[in-house]
Length: 91
Image (tube, rainbow, N blue to C red):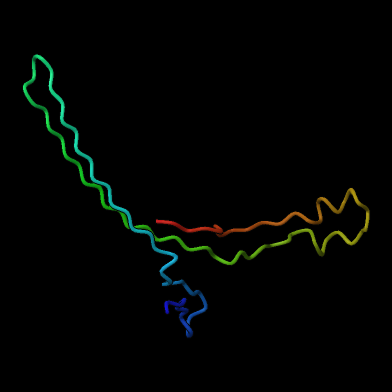
């Protein structure tokens, strides 16, 4: 059984689970000819390895403590948040 691996002594953990990796392979052959070219043969191989990891978002609420009013118009400004790190990281 394959499970997630988490670094225990580090604050920033990354996953080595199989679901975070993607492998693909493509093979393509093109053969063509016309009255001027006797034979044109093209063969391509494409191998790809992907790693994708989602981070736990950490939000910063700059106006949460500054605005203490329960006015619904000010609550829009009060509920604004900022995230400095991406949610998803892929290579």
